[in-house]
Amino acid sequence: MEADLSSPSGERYRRLSLWWDRLPGPIGIRDPLPGDIDVDVAVVGGGLTGLWTAYYLAVADPGLRIAVLERDLVGYGASGRNGGWCSALFAASGDRLDRAAAGGGAAMCRAMEATVDEVGRVVRSEPIECDFAPGGTVVLARSATQLQRAHAEIAGARSAGVDERGLRFLPAAEASAMAGASHVVGGTYTPHCAALDPARLVRGLAEVVEHRGVRIYEGTEVHSARPGGVETDRGTVKAAAVVRATEGYTRTLRGQRRSLVPVYSLMIATEPLPDHVWAEVGLARRETFADYRHLIIYGQRTADGRMAFGGRGAPYHYGSAIRPVFDRDAGVHEALRLALVELFPALSDAAVTHRWGGPLGIARDWFPSVGFDEATGVGWAGGYVGDGVSTTNLAGRTLCDLILRRDTDLCALPWVGHRSRRWEPEPLRFLGINAGLRLAQSADRAEEKTGRTTWRSRALTRVLGG
Image (cartoon, rainbow, N blue to C red; front, top):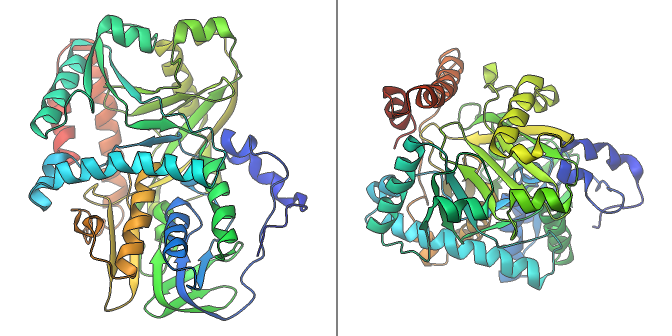
């Protein structure tokens, strides 16, 4: 079943993000589930996790009957609103992965690096036009304490067997030449990242899987994903295998309220910038960028010459609430604009044309996971903590192997089968998560004021399980 691209009703979704606004042509809406159906695999969630899972299953066994069920439109969630980093970043540290399995950190690092290449291969071969630009990532050190963290990351990479081809230190002059930010004293660079347009990726991938026979039902709200099938507001889907791929929206499923919490990340984008501004800012190969502050920031130079910039800072909402009004927070968006201008003074006069946000999923131990229970036929993946553009692909390939009972290296990675304990009930959840946010903000302010690492930084590391 193909999307009805003649329908104008999907145009209202353009306000979800810059990426949705840039989608070519009219935005069509697919039909909902027509009633009770039987399939081999039911995938709950029409984001990148669900679509990559459907893609690899359809490639491996074209005879499989696969249905993807999406409450809104494909790519409505984080998959169509994120920063567009297809990177080798994984939310759990190498040390934590090693504690989960001997050599787990190095194995996961290799798998994530290969995943960036795999996404590039697929978007070229299918093809999917998503402005894929493998320029790597530069992370800037802009103070003495940030420089210490850069050196510590290099040391950790070397101990894990990552050489300069995977991550290298940048002296101040080289870092500034790559990204012309203020107060740069050094940095790091990895080639294992590509900037892309995430909405074009997820929407293009949906078309690809449909062409391979996968059925996608939009406007279909799933109430529960259980052994043997899925219950929706439109009917029941019987399936031998069920995959939960709902990330920040997992709490909407029956019995999953405390599995993952939705935490908002917000973004802004400027108008297209003139060449003389980009000559000062740099990012000539569309390198993605960040710095070593505690409260995460991230950005990219878009294919149409804008600066897309985001970061944490939005509060966690009581009861894991998810509402469209939370996508825009005037105070946080203004703080992002000020942070961007402080980082790149050349952008001080640039108009901000887009402001948006959305929830991402975080497990209690900040450890992403993927798995499939053969006894129940239920699989899952998620908890990416904002590093999901590439990790979703690895999850999809892994779920394919697990469902088809293939004994592969992917199935032995340390995140496979990991179970995070549930989040605390309210109000403990609300108090704890927002206290962590304030701690990150306080740690950055203290470092800026004192010029050295404080107890707040060490406390934050412990909170995040480092």
